[in-house]
Length: 63
Image (cartoon, rainbow, N blue to C red; front, side, top):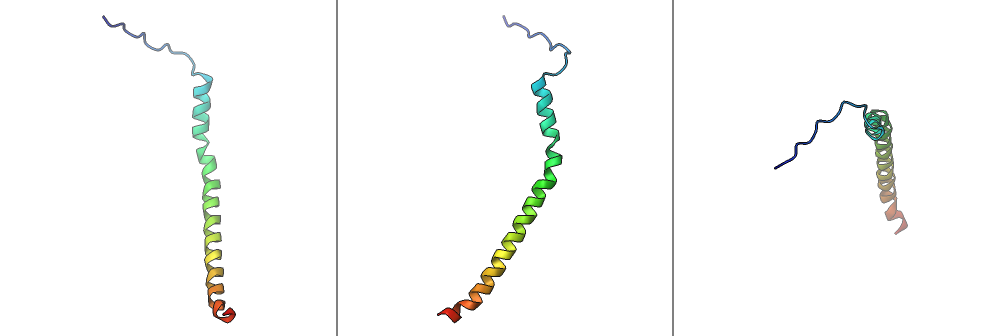
């Protein structure tokens, strides 16, 4: 004897569901920020290895 679950009533979505959808939709507003941060990190990596290369060339002068 199983009880049947009544169908969901057609009411307005709860505030938490609406908030969840809103936060999920704003990911496209945040995406350019994250892409910019990744690009900036790439610049720092390039500058680091460029400086490391320059310093490694000058290392025999200190020895």
